[in-house]
Length: 347
Length: 242
Image (cartoon, rainbow over all chains, first blue to last red; front, side, top):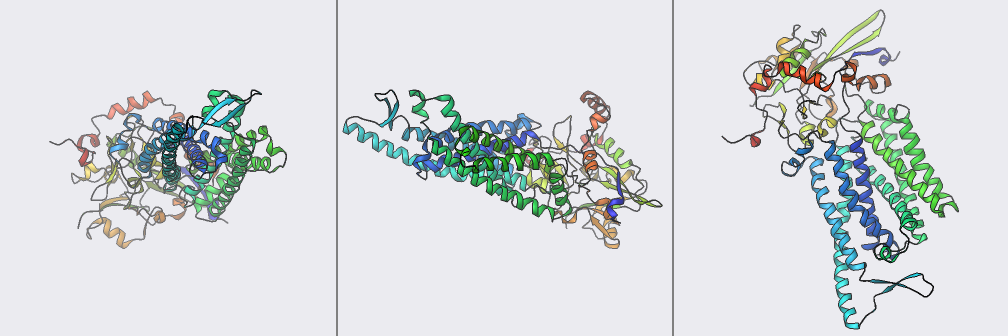
């Protein structure tokens, strides 16, 4: 007889789960911000011209989302008014302190980067005009040769700064989301958290959610904003094949994310008793519907299926549906990790 | 050599009377819904061979406390003698320490709105007294003392008897030792769905208490409980210079 069968806990005091939805929402938002930024650098740092219009949306979204995200952290504090303690009582061994500074530096860097994108590539470089049929056309700025020269040198230096802040932003973006992985990873008491794979798993799922969010925004931009002159100036038209390319990137990240999920769960099942309990909780316990149903099936398999189907994966409706599913799935992943990770009793 | 305070709990002597839980609450004026120390009770075996095991639990005042490492504002700190304390003026209540503690001994004080936990009754220890739970234990199951003093009671118990801390593999170096540790009682039982539910039940709801009720009961001991009167929990750099 298994001795565990004959053990019953008669009494124990209750324990409240300390970190809940605010924290998982915060993780979700930083992930989106970091990934949008990284995709925008594809165009503006690594020079993939094709992604420029989409990258611009990414560059706009990154700072906005990241300015909203820390609000969730402050609300979650028991003493929200003491949040400023973080800035002068820091402890450099704590990942939360790393985050304090990353969350301050990264959005500033994002804004500067965005500023130089518009300086270098915005209204100065392109001129919007209508051709005979009434369709909009983007043309290089026309003008006297001297003025054009001045403009080009200025644009070049702006471009250099754009590249500089873009490259500076890449490690910052990775860290600003990576550190949240360390917050979870350094939670020594929690079996599901204290895994060396955790920061990487967080980064990959961030890329998944960020790419999906960007696809959704690209499609929305085409549907909602239209092609008026004012819009074109700030958000150039996004070609269909760019969205399609982004969806291929998304598919790649989904596959990678799935590999991470599999390797994490597989190792959990054959580790210490607490790890096994965590694996059972998400595989067949109370978190199974959320983990298996929403995160894996709805959030990874269903969108991958949509992206793999030859004709359907060109349609914007299907792509939007896939993106929304991915976003829901990644949110479920954050929730399962944060709340599910704290479900396992520690005594 | 500096002092290193530890506690040794003799599980053979614990009868599960919960007097330590009560004494701790009185001494430290712990709010109704929270516990700094408690006694987990486990029944093992099948009829007719049944045995009840009690497992007192409290902060382990680890050698390498993960809560101190993870506290972003250095509110959790460790004294020279190993006692881990919280500066309630610094704590912002981010709850990261609660999430990272392997023993789940920390909680948010619903009235003070900061995290707190067992202090080894540091206000008593500094005056040469024993912690309240040790003083009150009728079976003399709890022993408190300096581990670095070879003649202390705790040193002798640790040297003479089979002792083990909870989760010795947690890597934090826990310093609450259990004599004749009971493996089955110490297990975490995370695969039991009913236990998971029970473990996270809401006590406030269970005994239908409102926030005001908790505050009212807390007031009854305010100023009488000795913890607040005799010890300044603020870390040195936070104290006003006199």
